[in-house]
Length: 117
Image 1 (cartoon, rainbow, N blue to C red):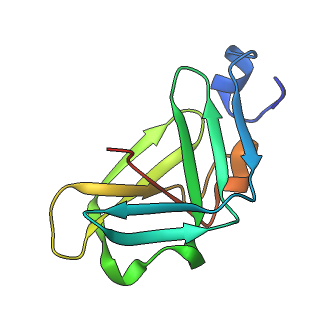
Image 2: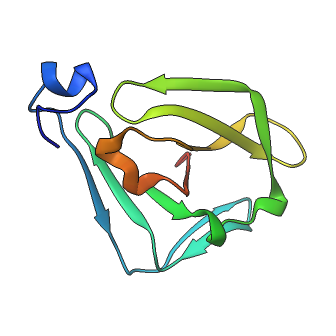
């Protein structure tokens, strides 16, 4: 990332970091024994002031077990607008994605992350 970004937060906080690292390790997301995602093409996102988060390629996520939460979205000044998913049976959101991420983190487009708890 550089300070010449079109987004004002990146220029104002030139030293803020969102590092995106490709990993080849098999990473799996599951809940109560049910696999929700598994891949060897995971992205590890290391954002300053946040914990590490694995992002799974959409193709490796069991979308048949999830449903979109259309009335929920949030804005991250560094990554953009997030959309959310919950289990198909209902409940609280368990996953999110940035469908149109900021240019500085465009690598996460097409990826879905899960809450670790």
